[in-house]
Image (cartoon, rainbow, N blue to C red):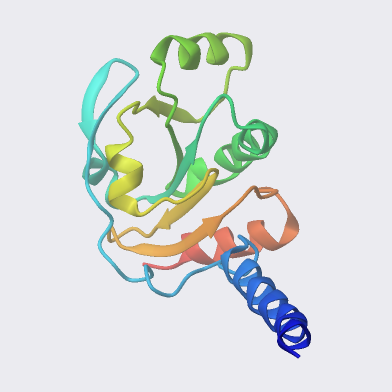
Length: 175
């Protein structure tokens, strides 16, 4: 009898595991409401040899993308982030990549072989990504013109898809 009870518990345990997997999947967590409306964490960075802060981009819509050169999905989405940058730059939008590569030399070498049109910064300590609550890469935060997080997007995206372009067109018209 004890064996039969143990066997009967396996399907219930399987259901619990399945539910947990669904909740942690990136597709389930798209646009997490818990971060929407929060003030974006400010941080210092160096872009094109100049020291600046994220807050210096206030007034622009910022697509803040956390990525790494060793992340296959991150690398796959880079060309569509380039195309998004080309589309939004004239309307006050900017794509900003923050690499979490622990080896800045590997990051630099990667960019030589795979140049990108958008601005990118290497932050090997991961303090910035941790401050944002980034749990996996790629992960992206859309920051509105007032410096508030409008949306968190987890996982790779086709940034120049029709759906995304409609979203960014609407976001760029706001504020």
